[in-house]
Length: 439
Image (cartoon, rainbow, N blue to C red; front, side, top):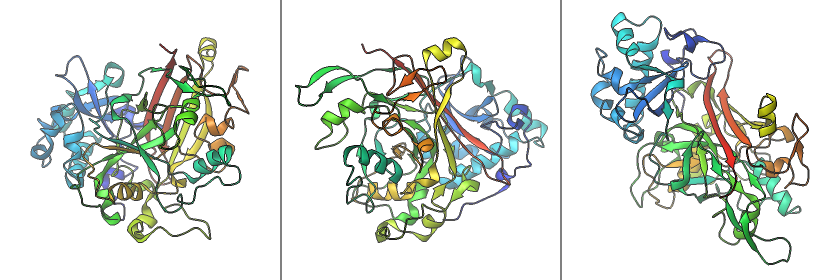
């Protein structure tokens, strides 16, 4: 599995959409992430591609581009209100489409290509971004050994990692119906909690938390009863997004034994609107996590030389918080954590292969998430449970406020970007959510 580089990754290529050439933009022409948008001048939800501060209506422009080998394969797929149909076409069709859109948007594009694209460009500020896909199933993993160890120490100081962790990617089945797009407020959930030996009570959570995660969408299906070999796993991955797996820690502590996460997780999960394709990520692939001496090698069905060589992604992730008082005072969001996806103990291919290893049939548009992405030190912790040591060590915000867990009115902002010498920086955009009081 060697990443394929072509003219779409050339850092010297500029776009005639000038905002795509600005240093630091998330969406240069080398990115071209997909999303679903709604605009007053477009008929229903549409497939779009981000370019600078604009979004290109893919179906609209494909109808006019000349010499378009991708047109007949993807035109119908791009006219729908989700990315599922496009995801189902596979990697070859996706690469053809990427190269054709890149050719139409580069500064050297023909006059006819520029005219065709110009008529189907909208300002991002004028559109509503929707969920990228119709997700029928959502699975959340626990793939960061640093997160698992930090959390384990809070509950089992002498035995933080359970015996299975280094042998099997751990996950749980989440709730697809409560996946929400970035920007939709999150209502503080109610549930049962228990303090000490007292009887449990029902009421709003007092320990609401975020989780900084990366999600990836399934492309192509495996039949029920058939596994997905590790060497073929990435052929079943369309691209990645940001995920905030909101968590009510006090509800979780009471309910999770013996079957695991339930109502503490299912009330809301926020997704970023953009799906950065595996093709765009090619320059930023990295070696899989280097296991320390003494750790077991993955079992053969989870071990592939190509995945070990290129299964990681050099992807920086940040989580920031903006409190109501900070907002009123004009104070910028404060970064609480910064971690890197290359530090995950398990690769995306290993997670997908594990999911299908028992014959579970994955479907196009299914969402798999990494679990909280944390690193080795305090500044790289991806949730407040870790950052505040379960609320025992509150963090102090720039205006002197303290937080053990999230309070009503707090806004959490996730962001991510890839950066490597010799290539253009590309970003994932942001994933935002503001906490509303309990109903």
